Length: 398
Image (cartoon, rainbow, N blue to C red):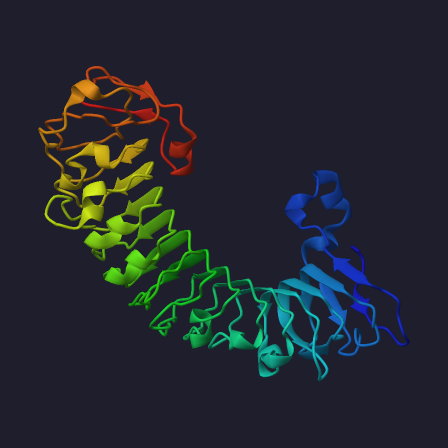
């Protein structure tokens, strides 16, 4: 449906799905642009009672449109899937009673009417909200026992994440991105099936919740551009964690020693974090002696490291494939690390102050520079480096 300008239904209607997505200018070939200049702005007029009589309507998708009506637009309770990616004062409203909505995906709209009656949306499984300026606090999701994903992006006035996100039994994905006012977050996290937690570009967020009991579901944790200064020691209870991404800007963040209890950790990326690693040998904790046996990627770019004593015994990192230490203040690596056992290696470029290297038993994907400190660039064929946004070439100094 490309040419619809108004939606209004007088009698009962058997329509089950409406998808309105006029093409954007950049998606059209040059010839069509000349013929259809009016597509630069597609304004859609929707009567507030256009949808209630569509009792069989199950899917409603409106993209690349501007809704001109100022006020609530009534939708049928039978609707299962709703997506709005356009502009204008879109305010969906439902009649009283239980709703069958499974997914709501909204951009630049208002869910004030939905939040008022959130207890009636028990079938909801997916919520994705972007640019919803009316949202001050996330709704109480204990009313939606089947919810699996909650994603919020660029909700500029969002201040609070409701306590219910910490206890929801079925929640699997929780993302807060570009929410500049978010500062109130639950003190603890107990959502046992949560597998993906992302807190990104929330500069007023100062504290990460405590993990009082083991959470065996969480596999991915991303914390970027917040005001967190430390990870709690209870992070050890994220026993299934496989991937951590930290990007704290200039805020130093301490990595607790008991992070070595994250025995399933495979991928660790940190950028500009002034991160502090404990020495594996300064503790009687047996987990610190084991190290991180499943770790295969450690990206510590520009982390203000001056020593790498946590790599004292590389047998503690038997699966390590990629080690990136660029932009740090390292001047030497431990003499206990012997180079003669090295089979393959890839060391990231720009060790500006590195003057001494000896490595032993380090299994790295790619090219083995022999001698290790080499004078010319060599290719590294590895998908992992590409995923990290790194150049597939390495420069070493002799």
